[in-house]
Amino acid sequence: MDQSQLFNLTTDPSELEDIATSPKHASDLNYFKAMAEDRWDLDLFDAQVRESQARRWIVYEALRQGDYYPWDFQPLQQASERYMRNHMDLNVVEERQRAPR
Image (cartoon, rainbow, N blue to C red; front, side, top):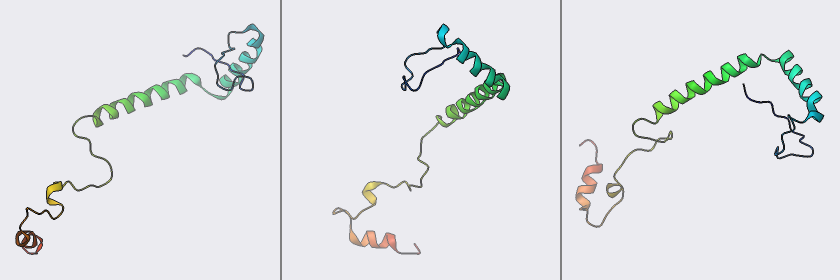
């Protein structure tokens, strides 16, 4: 389990000074610990988070195998055949576009 952290968000909104180890704030820390134990099973929560992270890591590794394609549909075409080019014979281009072939 991680070490306890406690911050005064009024005076330290960036959470730079951890006051959990300060004797002055020991009663506040004990209050929050007791409240958390009454409301949540922290060990179960920790186990569920770690299981979820492990499952997502496996999926991440599997998705990194092979080629990457974006989710949106993009038909793969050669750019040189997509537009009319000066080197192409117009009769050949028109013949390709007629159906049936």
